[in-house]
Length: 311
Ligand code: CP
Ligand code: NVA
Image (cartoon, rainbow, N blue to C red):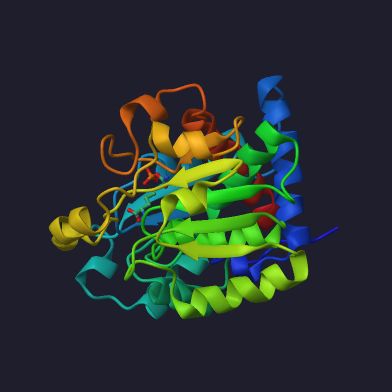
């Protein structure tokens, strides 16, 4: 079997399909055990530092609860309160924290900073979201799709919104790794970067996935098994809010978009959501929406990631 022991998790592009399947399989086992009330503590005595440069509800709580349930301990470290916030370097922080901890989860502005942390740390680094990617979220998304559809390869996911953000990037990597088709419906100027497209195309080539990028959300959503969206303005982009509201007007999952998708389509959102912007209230609260199962699965997937990497 694939072994993730001691490895970093920075981007889904770095994982093999086998490793992704191993995470999904382990998630299934751990979720079942959790629901049966089983006592399973493979991380007894292990500590995870969780560095946050940005806000978080799901990522923070799911990682912290995951560590506790697995018998370990999690430290919440706001970067403002670390010496990091006063200019201590990332390489120094990495080497010091490596002497205390068994792993670090970090949510940061710059993906480069997380790569630097990983370069200098002797312990595994898990990306809890950067400007470039959000791999743990997309692993939870793939698990949720698998739960609902009983398969992944051959399905079509349509992402409507900012095609150039962390979620779009990670979905491009994740879907192509597992043989899903992915269509990005995004306005000009907010479509995926060439670097991301090139990587995803390499993966798509070997898995047989099809990638489409279009300005036409109805073309993107046509016959989709999964409709996915995310906020128009990500954390760190607040100063562009007005420009983005104009650029993304109409890039919304609503009843009209649902009509062109497969009749059993599931609607997903990493959350937090802005009702009335990227998704309507009726759709996110409607029968196709699986957003809260998706959020719950962050916990089960986090437990799988932690067990495989730190166990
Ligand atoms: N989806 C997600 O990562 O949510 P948080 O920002 O609340 O962690
Ligand atoms: N694209 C969003 C995802 C939040 C989970 C952001 O980066 O703010």
